[in-house]
Image (cartoon, rainbow, N blue to C red):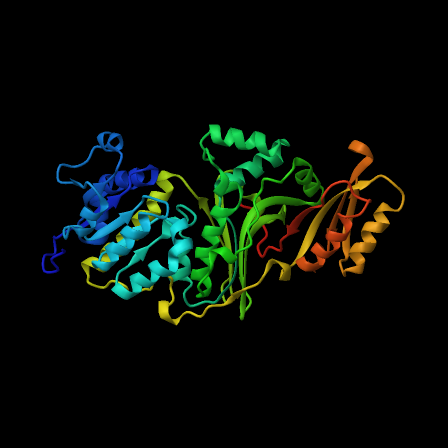
Length: 449
């Protein structure tokens, strides 16, 4: 272990998992060794690596004093390794190795959002119990320093709301669909060819990846444990170019958002496509970029923008955590700041509001029968449920004698809207199930250019 009496003793880092992010971090650690020493005031060195793929290992240029471990248990047990960097991904063995490292008193850095969203309470509790540091900045937003901002920079303010574009794949798809009028399936296939989408894109396009990230953000922002399974999640598979075009006519841009708000006694956390005013900053975030907008009670609005994925951007976030954890190890000052910014045992669990209770404006697209009285019927059912119409667009004849009728509403509860649509969709006045997209308020306006 580190000899605190030796001012030249290095903090030795062990890396488990050498995929895209792992190799990006390895390059950064080796390339910037002298810069890191200057900034830290002590050496930060590569103590060892653990990678199950022998082909990957053969392709790396490792320093001669770097130990290649046969398995993660061997690395975790080695007293020469002071800090473990878990970049394996997935739930297991990542969960087990992190917990085992903490049990033997080692701080850990991870980029594993799915693991923290699913088993975060166990892992955060273990870090607190064993007095070690846990760094996980890279789990949300790639190279965007959102977690450190919440945990440290804004620790003295009450965060009341977060809203973010936190999945680059979904944002790329929606951007291309909007700009070029392409179908979802066409853009998804192109994104896979270009490496912007996985061969199995389920987590990205169904909103699951965004749910993992908003769960972590909400837990840190509000000081409440968040149960992933309670978060309402809706993806973008059902989005059609026609709705993006109608959105433009109303002055809206569609984004997949992760949203979290603190209402005092309860939390509103959800993931779904949302129309945003085209002049808002989040609406201008295109392609694979991410952006997170937060609002503090004293600070007001703040926007963080940047590359939300990729080996090098994510590796910079890993490195920031490694440096912070290394300082704690070297100066014997670990666990000075709780991993979540709140003492683990002092947090209060707040209930999550059901989706039926949210209050929003809505975009509704009906495929209505082209007959007299249809529009008045639609307006009547909405009005009877307390839903006030703001704008209406009706286009020319479509297929089968039905026409698209698009309505935007004033604010109403989700339960009101769903009750009205249950009646409308069962009637003879429409030929398809109504398309529903929420319209979100945004706190910041302006331009990124």
